[in-house]
Length: 109
Image 1 (cartoon, rainbow, N blue to C red):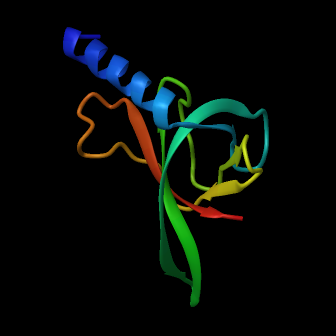
Image 2: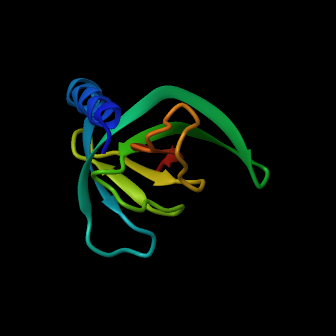
């Protein structure tokens, strides 16, 4: 990594240490879970899906912890027991030129 990328990763690590929540990610269809730390956008959004409204939110996870999250995967939160299901394809946000995080929309199930 470049010096800038190293500094960006260190800043991101500090952000996740302060604001992150522990979770276990399970890929679509099951398989071995992966422990990770996520940052949740706690603003609930109501979205329409096939004629039904549902609550959704946004989750970000570091690529260094989770190589390839996928639509249909889920995050079991270690505190509170809530399960969040990924409802869109994970992507790297435009404001992350170093490609350090995944961002995805999730719904509580």
